Image (cartoon, rainbow, N blue to C red; front, side, top):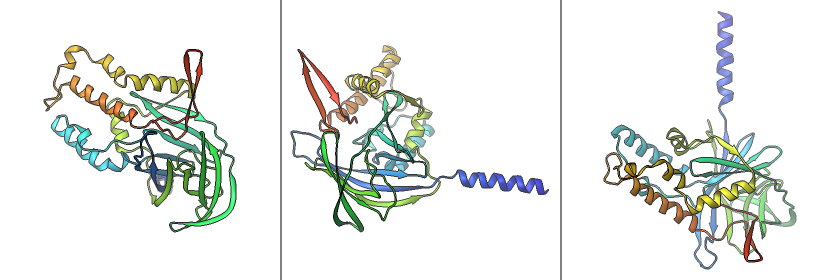
Length: 305
C-alpha cells in the first residue's frame, strides 16, 4: 500500500512539474508598412517568457482562438464549410522569433505553404547604455542605443523586470526592453501590459487545428539562405503546393454545405495571401539591393512576413 501511495505521489509531482508557467508581455507595435505612404498601422504583439525560452509573435490570431474554436466545432458538427476569412482578422506578421535561454540563441520560424521551417539567426547586439532615465508608463527605464538591420534603434529598458529580453529579435540589456523604436519611427514597440499564464501551451488552438488537417507543426531546420529562396518562390505562387494536389474535377466540386467551389476557395485564399505579402514593403530589417551587371542581387539583412 505504501509503495502504491509513493507511486501516486511521484506521478502527481511529475504532472505538476510538467505544467509550464509563462510571463506574457503585450507590446503595441506601431509601424509604417509602406515606404511611399504616410499610413501608420498598429498591432498587438506578445513575448511569452518561460524558464527555457521566449517566443515573440503577432497576437492577432491567438487572440481569436475562442472564435476559431467555435467555428471549427460547428463545421465539424454540421460537416459544412464556413468561410473563416469573414470571421477573423488576418495577422500583419506570420513569423515567430524563439530565443533559447540562457545562450539566447535565436530561431526564426515561419510557414512556407503547408510546412514549417526554421533557421538560426546569430545576432550579437552592441548596446550603448546611456545615463538618461525616463518613466515609460509605470516603469522606471534607462536609455540604450544600437544599430541593427540598417536602422538606428533607441531602447528604454527596466531593471525592475529581470529579463534580458525584448520584442522581435532584441535582447541583451540588463532588464526587459519596455520601449524600442528606430530613429525614423518606422517601427516602435511599447509595453502595454503583462500577465502570468499558468499551464502555458506554446501552440494556439488554430495551430493545433491546422496540424489536425494536414499542416504539421513539426519544424524542419534549414539555412537562412535556403529559407529566403523558398519563401521568395512561395510569395510568387502561394497556392502552388495546393494546386498540385487538386485535379480539375476536384476544383469544380462544391465545398460541403456551401455554394463555393474548391477552385473558388483556392482563388480567394490566393488573393488573401498575395494581399498579405503586398501589404508591407518596409521591412524591419532593410533590404539592400545591389546591381550586378544587368542583374539585381538582393541581400537581405532581413525581415519576412
